[in-house]
Length: 294
Ligand code: GLN
Image (cartoon, rainbow, N blue to C red; front, side):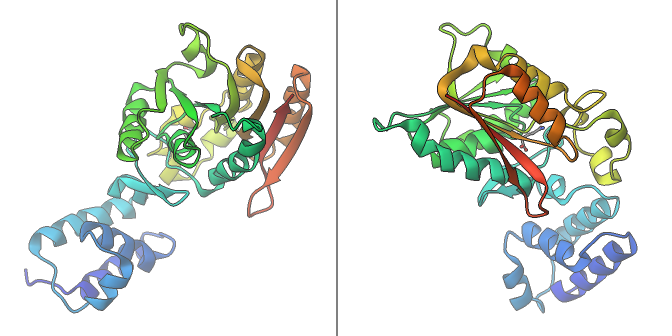
């Protein structure tokens, strides 16, 4: 087979992706090829008349075929950016979503007040860490903090540990296997937290059945399944919050579509919060609930 130029390869791939019904086929093709060539999309454009080696061509064709079957690009390239930082991802973890960055924004907004005048470091918990995006980003942006991250999946913890090491925060970030707070039950002394974050699995049974193929066939169901009504994770987090929150503390939870009232109710039932605030994402959906514990 004669070698194709970058330009020809991109045209061919865009066509295949378009035929397969993938959104933004040109951009997707450029992203995949840029990763394979270890460069960026601008360089691809500047080098479009160069030919692709047989080896690179084979890897690119394989990536395009996988993408045509709706496999998420992040699993094909093994990476995803979150809050400007690069994270390794595998099918053992949920692909970080940009909406989740709102938790980081709010964490930064409250961190100064929580640290108080003494400027003491925060003690943070990330419940259901997956790839570790929230825990690692908090450790990076709050350099005096100590973070404990939890996940039920050992395979997910392996990815999260890799990400912590890649960002050099392994010394302030501890990983624990278990379901939400249960993961800390054997720790002596019992930790107390003043910043608690989580993006728990929040899809109910119906929503889980109606997921797009790219999510349903590839992302870990454990990271998505929130039980019959999608609220199981919130019940577990809120149910034992009193045992682990160290006032003054802030709880930041990502919330799924249509769950605002029910989650508000669950929060009120705990009787723990001095104030509750909603934060809205770019689609103007209530996405993050912030609860202050005085
Ligand atoms: N905390 C990770 C994220 O926000 C994983 C969340 C999950 O698996 N439900 O991407």
